[in-house]
Image (cartoon, rainbow, N blue to C red; front, side, top):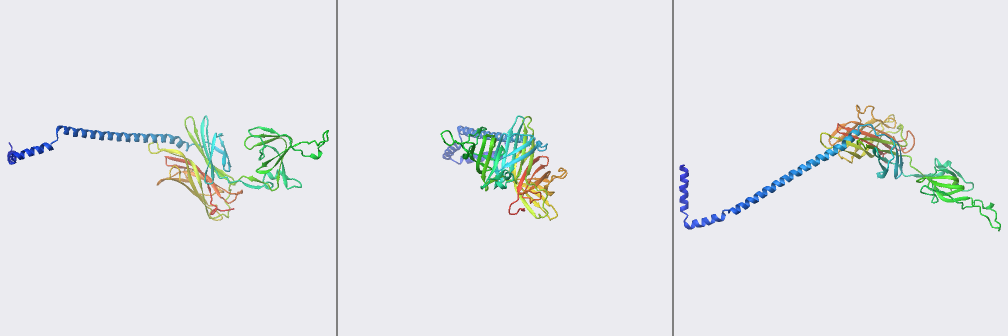
Length: 468
């Protein structure tokens, strides 16, 4: 046996012997109290097993949650890629068509004519600052079309009927009175009356007025025989109050809305020489976008547009210095990353700000701008690079791929690609009038993953804008 081990055993014997018998009993009692019983040992072991099992279940639940979240995120990104893919392709394809005309209305829905033609089934009206916004939609058998147009038509004004560009030749003075009178036919008159029919109906009026009582005869009893030969009632012409009169067989046919056809009889309208009629604002701009989705296949195509009245053909030589134009911008975009990453597509609204530097008296100057405050991503911005003004606006480069005029910034990264155009408009007619507004379109590419198209309209603040 090992010598060190023998020494330890002998020492232990002496220590135990020196404790005495009573000490041995107390020590044994103490040891019995501190030593866990087999039941207690089993209980502690069971509790530890339960804790270990609970921790394992929690770990597995967290792993399952993370897996579900990861799969949900992958599914969301896959859905976004599936949505962005046709938009990304459509934004690089031929335009869906053209806007043939836009007819704005003050605080009312505009009307549009497209090519190819679309009869929009529904429309709604909203506003953005001084702009009225009409949103059109139509779900056809082959395509679904959506179109948004912004217009800035102002409130109507009024002029004397005798000074109106069209109505002045319709009315003539009534001798020995302060009245003027017009003879009316057909359905092209801006007329209204509570006596006119509605609902597409026609009314033939029974005469209730004797226009020349001095020629009336008498009946067999010597009483005056009234010769009712005229229909007379009140109404309006272009908003001016007056009186309608008709002789002969007098029929009015309602043709929908505010259109009434004076289909038979000789009709006149009489009003005062000081009567005034409403005149629509003839100075306006418009812009917007058109999106079409094919029912079969789901392919998308887009178009943007802008135009207006009182187009400026040439910047006046007397116009120098700078002017800033601000207004809304709208459009469609797509970010498509097929290898992974965030993809998205849809419409956007933004803010446009353009600066015109009209230069010296012998130069037309330059125009540049920024598009910021994108509704879909605050980190986006576009730079509309400075271009020479030619005539009354700026044109897209002949080769926008080789000579891009738009750059797109997302966060801290900027890509160059795309083009833009713009046209100046004035408050008054005249090819060389001072430009108070500008409208245009733009497109941009962000490397190989981003595409967008848009349009804008902007006004020059009264305090700083050049005036006619």
